[in-house]
Image 1 (tube, rainbow, N blue to C red):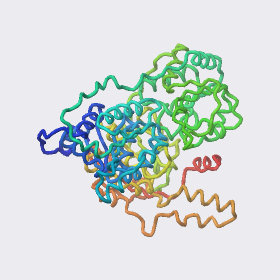
Image 2 (cartoon, one colour):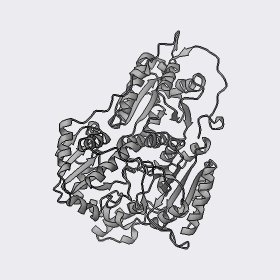
Image 3 (cartoon, rainbow, N blue to C red):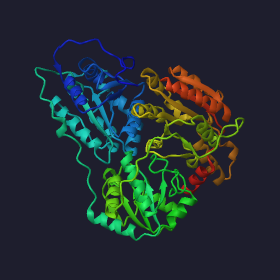
Image 4 (tube, one colour):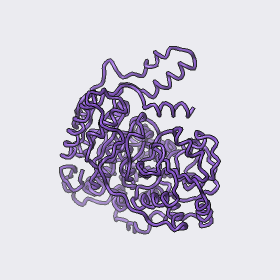
Length: 589
């Protein structure tokens, strides 16, 4: 979607100058913060702010994105941030809308992405409340619903305080480690009329602080360890998508002759076809990765997700550990998304990419060569056309269908085999949703597609059928705002992850494994995925059952995407995970 394309923007009738309202000022601040989009599901608690976005700002800068559920709104903002590293605004209606959006907010928190969430409440002053509905939609402490998984929240009691809250929330959200913030506006603050427009802030003076450099003592100790290392290993985790950072990361690895492991949960962080890359991007390390870690004498963790758990799975790791992360700043004791406490011989309190640059400087390593956009590089050959689809065949057929295309893989399902695809650029793969729930995929695909629209890349996602169905109505927003992408639904007609768990319980209790499907299979009737997609106004193709059918469907889908259409393909796969995923789930217990 192009914000300059009037067909994709709902343009309001011109409004007369009819006074200054509190919400007009708040809307102007939102524009001043440089926010391009605001995703929302309408609600009366922010009717004043909604009016200001339309009639004061003309629905431009930011442009509203109408969503059919608050969870979709936050998921769209999440996907957008994963591409741009910039926050999108999200507005959620009072307590009820906020409760709808909580899972998607939790995802953004776990994934450490910036997001500006705004809410509203009925009048805090009880004398101003309308009977019934305002009482239902007013909470004494609305922010407490999500306080444990946002970086900061506030409920300003005046327009002036609201300006400051918006500035502070923006600074905090964008400061590493990034995350969502929440500001809740009293409806009476929005709807109060003012005689004069207040002096708006100089936004340049309220920017996030400059990134903190790592302590030189720590950099020198890390450099000395690596200088003397015989078998260094780099764990490339939650790093930036900046091509310059990618280039320096590769240059440092090559200079050290280090081995590298990557994680499929956090997106592309190192070229997986590089001679120094070991194992495969995975949810859990495999035996090959464990052997690499056991043989290491120095391990560099670049904000690796679950360092303690990885070392535990590897067993008998004796290496010195250099940790570069700011994530500890968000650990609050409510959730356990911080994972186990890892050992660290050198603990650099900085963003991982700053640590890479500092260590590379200390070792005299150059800038490296920035990656270039290239066509997709599947690691599996094209399967025979008549082959029935499973998760491995799907990967091979998808690669054949995308041959010659420069694509960004936005999402992959839990059962995906990391060895089936190569990532050679920071935008080749964007990672998972952070919170490991279901229902985020469609919204995140839409948001990522918005972020990718000027990058010349084809947005592609492989979604699970459960993920698709929980959030299928998100695709209406894509159709309405003409947001093109290709989504392949790996439709195994089951909540298969829980079949694996039920089988394990049955085996441990000596009960019939044959019953594992009950309460898990999505059938009788089977869902017409392509039909559901068409009902939202987008292209639906399928079902397809074989590799040849999927290759043809993908090629047809790509042609439609290039015409500006969002496309969903229903790929009917046999239930099952790749063998390494099942082994990883077993080892993780």
